[in-house]
Each structure stands twice: as C-alpha cells, then as structure tokens.
Image (cartoon, rainbow over all chains, first blue to last red; front, top):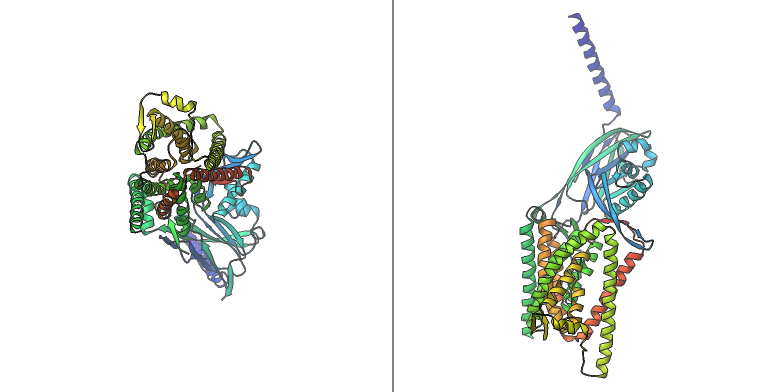
Length: 262
Length: 306
C-alpha cells in the first residue's frame, strides 16, 4: 500500500514538474506551426496554376526550411545518348524510384549553411539528399550522380523541382517569430495530395517539424473528361471521333455555302 | 492571354497556339494530302504535351482535318474512293504486320537507331527525288507543252499482274493487288516509324500508280481519315491518351486550314504541289538531322511516343 502511495507521489511530482516546465516554456518558446493558406486548389478549364502561402509561428531566431512534396512515385524516362559517337538518340529507359514527382524547398539561408549533410539526408532536404534516397537502374555511383542531375534538370524544366533560399519573410513579435511565404503553384503539378513540412533549424540540426497539406483536385468538365478518358476509353474514343467527323463536315458545309455565295 | 487546362495532358496551354498550329498543319494537309503528324507531334511535345498524348491527340485532330479536306476535294471530284479502299485494305494489314515487325526489331536490340536512320534516309531520298523530278518536269513543260511519261519496266510488270481493273476517277488501270500491296508496304513502314505515312503514300501514288496529283491529294486524305479513326479509337481505348480539349483546339484551326489548302491546291499545278511537298519533306529531314547531331539541352524525355 505504502509502495503504491510512493509511486503515486512520484507520478504527481513528475506531472507537476512537466506542467511547470511547459508553462515556463510557453513563455519563452513558441511551438512551430504551419498552415497552408490556399490548401485546396481546384483545377477547372481555365486553371493556369495558382499561389500557395505557408505561414506560422516559430521560436525567435530559428532558421526555417519549408519543403513541399508529393508522395514518392516510380518514374520512367527516356535517356538520350550518343550512338556511334555521332548521333543523339534514345539509348534506353531510366527508372527512378523513391523520389517525389513534385519537390520544392525554400529556406531562410542556403541549405548547406543551415544543415549538416547527415541531417539533410535524414529529412530528405535538398537535391543531394534526394539523390541519396533515389534508386535508379544504373550500375555505378558516378552514373547515378550524372543521371540524377539530368533528372533534376528535367524536373526543373517542367517546374516540378525547385530549391531557393532567402524568400521566407520573418517577423519578430511578442517574443515569437512569425514566418510567411507566398509561392507560385505551377500548373504542371498534377492533381493529388501534397505535404508541406516546415523544419525549424538551430545549430545545424532540425529541432522541430510541423506539417500541413495542399490538395490539388480536378473539378467540373476537366474532372468529367479525365475520368471518362480513364474509365470509359471506348465511349471517350467514339465521342472524340464523332466530334472530329462532325467538325470536319460542319466546316466543309460552311465553306461550301460561302463558295456558293460568291 | 487565354489559357485552357488540358485534362489528359495535365497541362495548361494558350489556346491561340494550338489553333494556329492547327491552321498551318491543316493547310498543308488540304494542300498535299498528308496528315502532318511529322510536324504536329514534335511541335506539341515542344509545348510541354507528353509524347504519348501528343501523338494520340494529333490522330484525333487529323480525323477532323482529313474529313474537312476529303469533303473539299470530293466536291470537285478529286477523290478516288475505289483506289482509296484498296489502299486502305492493304494499309490495315500492313499496320498489323508493322506492329509485329517493331517487336522483332526491338528484340534484336538497337531498334531505335535502325528506325531513326531508316526514317531520315527515306525522307531524304523521297524528298530529293520528288524535288529533282518536279524541277525537271517543270523545265520540260516550259520547252514542250505536252508532258510525256515513258513506260518503264515497273509499269510493264504491273500490267502483267492478274485482276486488272480500271480506276475511272484516276484514269488508270491496275491490278487490285498493286494498291493492296503498296498500301500494305506503307502501313508496315508507318507502323514501324510511328508516323501516318502520307509523305510516302503521295509519291507512291504519283510515281507507281501514275495517278493525277490533284486526285492523289483527295484520295490520300480519304485513306488517312480511316487510318486516324482507327488510331484514335485504339489510343483512347488502350492507352487513354487522347486529350479531347486539345483535339478540339487543334481541329478548330485544322478543319479551316484544310479547306483553305484545298482551295489553294486547285490554283496550283500538280508539279508545283509536288515541288512544295518535296521542299517540306526536305526541311523536315534537315530538322531531324540537326536533332540527331546537335547536343540536346535535356538528356531525358518523357517515355512514350516517337
């Protein structure tokens, strides 16, 4: 009985201490928060990309990294190479796994000034870390490095990969640090769910993370056409053919009438 | 600027670009009786459309352009339906054989190299031959008013074949086996090279079948129409790669372009049409040669398509 009482007492002291520390901490530290303000992007017929803003609160003086990424997917691309030392043509497929289709990273300073290589790899921050995680159908590390660079270049060309520093706005207020970033959301980013992860960084280490989500969804005619093309290919094909035949005849008739008028 | 989102290509496009492209390629289609896929598909890829979607959607818009063009040529009696149907029958068999052929080539390895080189050589030879021949006959015409076509060994062989029939619209007599065989040959090559084959069919109709140039254009379009209906359906059904929105934008331009091409074609002589087509084929050849020899800015591209 006395044993139980002692245990209860220890527990009570622990709870009291934790409450006290937490209370004290809330005065000095701000828990990292993240909110994507345009978190539901609807893709309609006139969609041409959008903007997404991420804001939140962090500890004063912490550096921040914001990563926006889709889920990892298997991607197959065609490799071009020189054949016979003269002609550029397709020389095979490049299969890339364990990397996202969409990846953007923003930071208050250059990534290499903020994090150690190990930390970057641990949290998949930056292209070298992505390369480390990626698996490809190549035989040597040298080839992997070469083809990952090409892969990142290809993705950047389609506005699906980017990394930039110095574009997060910070403001100190009431002992807290407010951050904010407004980014262009590329129309090339396909429909799906995207995760926004905010990393608070101090002394080369990630001290805290917070996440939010962005959903890109097709709506209206765009959704109807995409769904039909995918799920009812035969009907979609027939409609496409009938529309083309109708347009061809229609324009032909219009021209015949205009010929007759002259 | 006015942008539309393409549900299957998953990209957004300025609507004036595909309409303009459609107009230009439709004009060529109505003028020369080619589908224009050898121009349109690479241009769409350059605009950020995935290769598979570009090729499939182009087939869909060619259905509209060739309907418009066939209709325009039919109105002035320039479509030989009989010849077109025999070529089509051959083309259908050739397409099936070509698909098998490409599997064998791929299994042998280095298929892309062989295909690309064959394509460039074929374009170059056809373009150069047409160019030189058209130039010579244009010169001859200025000196003598009556063009005379000498009968050669090929003509003699073709006449010796069984099942001879008259193609009234074209004013020629051939064995039915000839257009079926030639249609099959073009079908095989087109399937292997991943192109429609109009640039091959037009010279074959002129130099081997001896058809008049204006009937060739209408008949070629008639044949292309059916080939592209089949391709559009198969692409929609099996690969889900036809983008209806993009096809509509393209066909707005191409149907009008095809009509304008047909009108313009009536004002040009057969020789002039031939030499213009030869120039376009040669320009495309040079473009492909540059693509093959200059270092590309990106060493990766999306899988699918040609």
